[in-house]
Image (cartoon, rainbow, N blue to C red; front, side, top):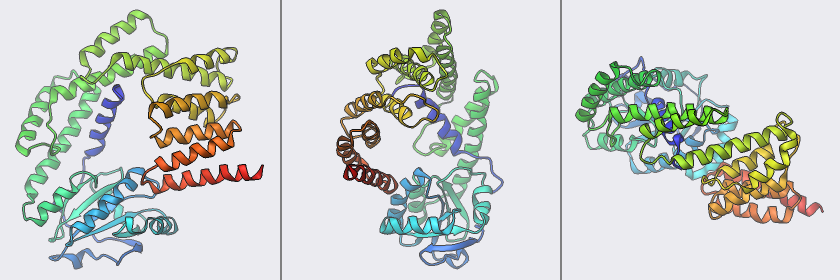
Length: 406
């Protein structure tokens, strides 16, 4: 999808990745303080010195990105024989144990539960990290030499350590450069025209060249980042103006600014099309909840049904709101089914979420047999996400139970 959310996501990811911290790479790793070892033998970092590398990963059962990282960590555990991977959650033991048992061999490394977040404080808090999943690498000398998202450069770091090619000084320089990049991004968010940003950008570009990428594999271009920040700001302003009914002249002024700052992938027509559909959906849902022009509800429903947004997921999202949003006084299950079906067709029946919403709309509309058929398709399309598969299966059983009770 080519709209401003691509840029928003990029900047959010950049900001989330970099943190000012009190601890530094090369610091001795603190002991693991564990309430319960759920899977595998207890790990004593002091006993690993001179023998093995440790990967300490912080995760949770409720965290989708954490669940997505599990197969990767299992693969790394199998690949690196001198590495011990420990996944640490701060949830209750019963929750973690149940999850780990369900995962079986798909989660094939040591799993533990933190002791009142003591280990998290020694690692996550010490390095200023707030988001999970996040992993730390402890080398054979007992030093923390890398930290980041487990789907990032963890594997490359382990390979470099294995091959004797890991450069701690370079890793420290990169960590310092990342903190400078965070300061640059924060300043740009406040005022992208601040003259100080030019000098900050030049220093960062020099560091990027020296390190072969502040983020390995990615080239930092200060002018491009500033342009994206400006674009993000203008896109938000345009969205506010669009939803509040500003004059055509004001919208034209903002469109000109969008064109001047937009990345090549940005499609203004699609952006406006999506906003138009979102505005229509907002008006409809407000009317359906009794807060808007309730007399316009039938007309708004017809407009929603006739609208053809380019984003294939938007109709499904509106359908789900009709089915699930609190406070709606009027739930049009037929409209929800038509909208969800549009997303199903647009994604060629391959999107499990669209299939799930469509089946739910059919079920709520009393078409239980059809709902069962489409829920089976949703289950088949769900992939390897065990939690999603379980939810899909439970929903299917609910529909089948309803059919059997007739």
